[in-house]
Length: 249
Image (cartoon, rainbow, N blue to C red):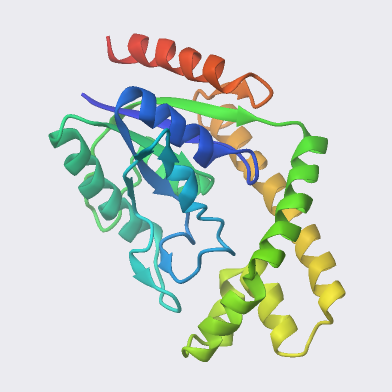
């Protein structure tokens, strides 16, 4: 049986930090389920936060980040193949794979075994942990994080991508930060207008993520164990470990 431990939740809920600390505790490695973190050079805008993978002096290995060139196309079928390769690599070395991300279609493609071109996809015995965050706190964290990313140089990052030849059309199609900052750099939005519209778009994106996760539970029969982010990190980790031991017993 292929066992899989998954951490999911809306943007800004602290998935990466929690998954990295959990992986540290269970000798695991992270497989990213984020449709934009696959691209090299798209760091601040996608929230890679690679420093989060350094826990208590140890670097937690991660997979499916920085595996495609910015400006190219990457789809769920390619991600599935990458997931299987990472899963096999991790388990063959005796480590525990921890799938972590907010791209619902990517996560569900593994859990439900989406098939493409008649290719049979293996089944997984999945324990799915959702990080529960109140709407007000989520909105607060999104707004704070957006301002922080702008201060960290997100505009300069995207300007650099354009200077290196990544098409503005492709950046706009990547959505959210890349769409609105590109429109600003093209002179189609004023700075404060860009910030305001982007903030609204991220809030709407988080809402769509939660709609997808609810659909997984209510319409597609996938059980998600929700843990409040207000629960101390240590307690959350212990709860997940307890559920995980029952899952793999």
